Length: 227
Ligand code: DX5
Ligand code: ZN
Image (cartoon, rainbow, N blue to C red; front, side, top):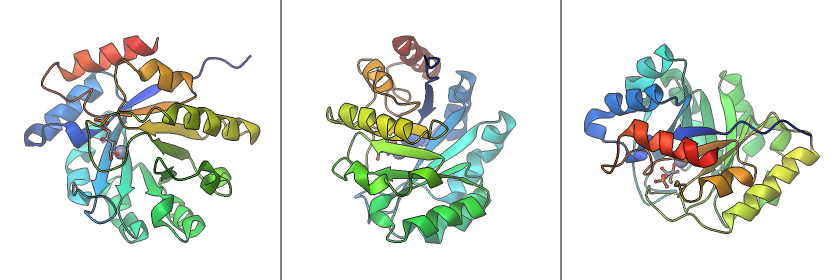
């Protein structure tokens, strides 16, 4: 019997108060976050624009001091162009969308060649079969449980079965070192379902960073709900 899988929360700064971003990141780390998720959007691949390497550089000292990994989610066209800049800015993980990578194998090698962990992700309607050939090459697979572009969206219920199917794909290939990350719409109400389906890393934005509660209280409530 496998030991129960460790499930970690990766707060997404997309919903943080950018007027005090450093403070918010420190609060998430103080509450136990080992990974911080940074959503990069270019206004082309997704209908929204967010941050670039500059912001990663700004929070890097805070993360580095705590040994926290910066998990960068590239929702951009031609992500290969940005790999050097984000690696130099301190990305610990760089995750690319299969939908933006016609040369996915080469792009994953490019990320690993600059010493960064390589992740691959796919939109809710993209078949998991698109991942089959690349699974053995990546450190992380990210299942989008919302349509990428915005925080605060509703979890797509069909994601749970996709997560379970992907967990089976990883198990069948003996790839239990690959992180199974899920991103979008995760709350206290559904976190146990998502973790129970086989996720090991949960990206959570608006349920962590919101005016209703403190970052610490929100993270503790989410961790309680997984137990
Ligand atoms: C959406 C982003 C997600 C988002 C999650 O495109 O990839 O990381 O920030 O935010 P919530 O948890 O609010 O859905
Ligand atoms: Zn994300």
